[in-house]
Length: 114
Image (cartoon, rainbow, N blue to C red):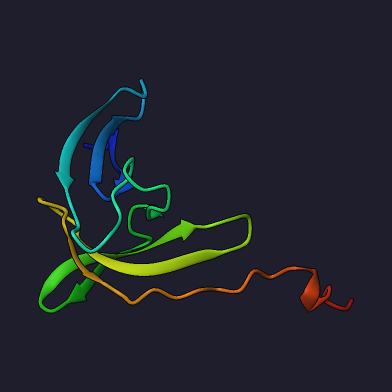
């Protein structure tokens, strides 16, 4: 439906919502859990993400989306993971990358020269 959007509310549990774009009203359509990740509301360090930033792609004969999630430990320290999820029901996460860290790009790198 062009008047609605499926959005990811959280990664673990992976909660997907159907949102009416005209009214902003929503309802939950799916929830799955990922045993390997900390659970939202149980751990102060849980993975946050945005519904798949690249989709659809072909992976092992399936049409999937590729997303990135992160845990924030303090103002500058984030651990990331890529994840692969189905783009249709049950929208579950099929694979996780190892954790990786992108260094904060700050003043220590200097400003670009003009």
